[in-house]
Structure formats: structure tokens, C-alpha cells
Image 1 (spheres, helix red, strand yellow):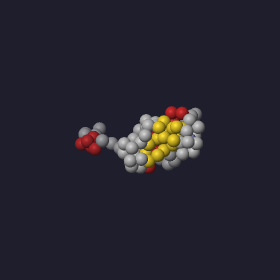
Image 2 (image 1 turned 180 degrees about the vertical axis):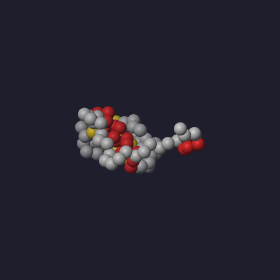
Image 3 (image 1 turned 90 degrees about the horizontal axis):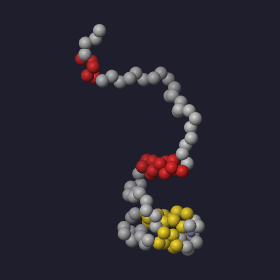
Image 4 (image 1 turned 120 degrees about the vertical axis):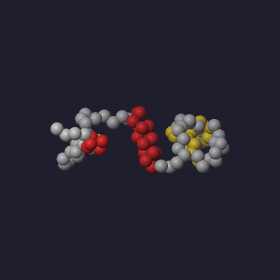
Length: 94
Ligand SMILES: [Zn+2]
């Protein structure tokens, strides 16, 4: 059953589960009873946690971008050796 999103001017977003195609264009807000028009949102057909977290991060970065002053720290320990292309093993060595 899909999740439909509405927005009340007083109370903010309201999510409602309804059968496919049975969502009215305007819903009465469950908190105040005012008309809450339906919002057009990206479909969330599967509740994949990683995908939902990525969508939430992307949406929050639009309005609250993370401000950094330096690059992230390097991991501790020696750097791993670069992976060589296995095709170079057959080449002549000096
Ligand atoms: Zn309301």
C-alpha cells in the first residue's frame, strides 16, 4: 500500500497510507482538521533503509548543507599498496 504525503499549513507534513489510486487530492489534517493538499514526492515503493537514509541525507543537504573547514582525516596505519593491473605482470622489467 503506497504512502501519500500531504502538507498542512499549520502542522506540516502528514503521511497517509491508502490503497493505490485511492488518495484524495485534499485530506483533512488529523491534528487540526484543516485542508491539507497532497504533495508530489518521489515514490518510496520499498522500505530499503539504506535508500531511505540516502534520500533523507540528500533532502536535508538541500536546506542544511554540512559545512566543513578541512578534508576528512586519513585512516590510521600505513596506506595500502596500490593495486596493479594484472596485465602489467607480463611486461618486461628493466
Ligand atoms: Zn493541521
